[in-house]
Length: 470
Image (cartoon, rainbow, N blue to C red):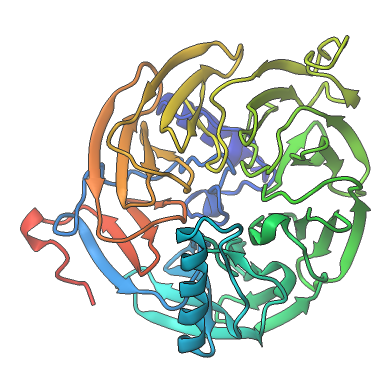
């Protein structure tokens, strides 16, 4: 069997299940059973083999709940019987609490930015057991005072870990990029310099992994670039400058286009496609707004680029046709390039990324909770609604088994039907704050809150509740 065939067979299966997928650059049967990266095994937010519960609460379908140390927004990665987490733990808890109080006072007084000033931190990678949440190992890869503050609701550990089942790649941005074994032994570390982020908002773009290459974006207020590292050694393979690109938080997507693996990276100046092997720029396209955050999913060779701060933009780009400087038709006197299939200029997402469901592209205008699904082929609106049960949402929607899960900062989750017209299947609530994205593996959902990590699964009865909590 060829190494690509599991992806192709899986594509047929997932479409039957009502979940549309792209063909990611990394796709093997074992990876498909896990959650190796922030946007899942397909980089589309879809878990093709998962079938988790649709309902839960603090007393229903909580298999276990454990306290997690430190402060982080990083979404966990899961492989086999292990959950991998990144976090930062203050060396001086009193000093950290004082810095957080000062930031809160600034926010209360409408002073800008309400930033948490640097305090010494341990930058930690750790593994927990999927069985009961017990800690298997913890490694502090660095102890240092961060060079820059971060926004009060952010953290110094906002990028998410990546794993291939052999190594864990932990990107702390200005505080180093690290690779460990699955047992926590440090293999290599790389210092790419210091980022200066807009308004000291903090860093957050996660790396992408494909065929032994780790793709690391570095857009900030200084000299921006994109770098690819050898995953085994940390050695730099190539680097390309991205002049004029300000701070962004978008995680790149790597996809196969013809006989090449291509990196798709959104940008405020121009979104671009790069040849993974050489770093050659293949195409570019203007039109995104500032403060790029959503990561672009890919379906049937079409990349969906989106942004939603101080403007709205969603562009569908046919990667097989994309060559050179493209236009989406909104430029003065410009015509739409053939590679730009369609674009949209309203109600696009700012913080949450998009999700692919059936033949739809769905997204949330998070601070108004306007949920929109459009036809992936035409961009035509299928439906739009306001999801009333939700409050503010920073995490990104995920999908499995014909359902979409949207988790709010206040701990409420709306479960929607994937595909077709809008249908709210369930609303759930937990006693924590959530910014990390849900993780779907097998018959479980893992939810990383600010205080706890939850394992949600079907229990024998609701009365059992969270008996395994610690």
